[in-house]
Image (cartoon, rainbow, N blue to C red):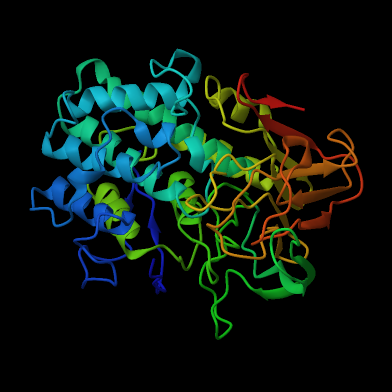
Length: 451
């Protein structure tokens, strides 16, 4: 999706508990997004704003409605059905034979209280973020859609505040996850692995091999050296990734602005948010009722301060963040590690591993305050959607006293061998000396825990 350099980001903190963003006036001229293309989140984000204002929609969003949550059973896109369902909610359009309110009640229950999900396994809607766990590319549009649902709930009849409460829980969980991986500032540079083919031949039976070198490039900086984004960097690995999540590279800069908005991080001067997400979230924030004690993301002043304080370590409070995540289940083990001035996340394996039509994972990211640098572990030399396997990301030599991380694009323990696209490729990075201050571990079958 097209990126837009935002001239300024100004937070206007009001004396009332609610707040308003004054980035610019909606709408601006059309961006590079095709408004009739529902295959991309950008078109449906703009249509969601149209639906909220009573205007006619332009994309064929109805084709992405998913009454039976098939996308979570068949490894389809998990954000397109959510965006379509948000439009349906605002337009009052049924999703199959059910009302959009019923669909959203089921979805939010499954996401935030997986053990109570009424959709049976092997459907994976019971896992928070599903197959797109903390994806640098796919996570943000889903979060934006839930923000629109919460806004609907405060402006429409919502019996028992059902969708309001459940969307609030979802957004608070998202803020907690982002907080656990947030650095105190941007990543001005990034270390990534560049691969060179060292041997090929006829594959199979001869599989390619690759050598790798570390290269350094701009991250939250522009091509001319200027800053694209200067808020907290989210060192959050995830599924369905495209190289890095830097604002100025192949990844997305959309999660960081959501975090900045959710906790009202002060003094952020620039943002690399996509035009369409910005349109949607600006509209909700600028119309959020002043009578609400929480902002559009479910955080009141006390919780916003708690989240900002954890990022700054004054004090760290992983116990409270884990309590916020109570009930959520996650499709793979996922670890957040914290040292003073260092954030690391590790994804244990790639759940989006159905071969040609699925997407490679980012197994680990490290952010260091002393260098303002991010390090990425992405062991995929070839196409991000060809011969995608589970692979793994692991702390070495063990979880309790880690000194490094290794990421490998295949896992022999699962019967995976080298592929003709990626070979058998591993990448590593070192961790700070000394035991981490704490680890937070997400798992499929039990609550998140502090270790």
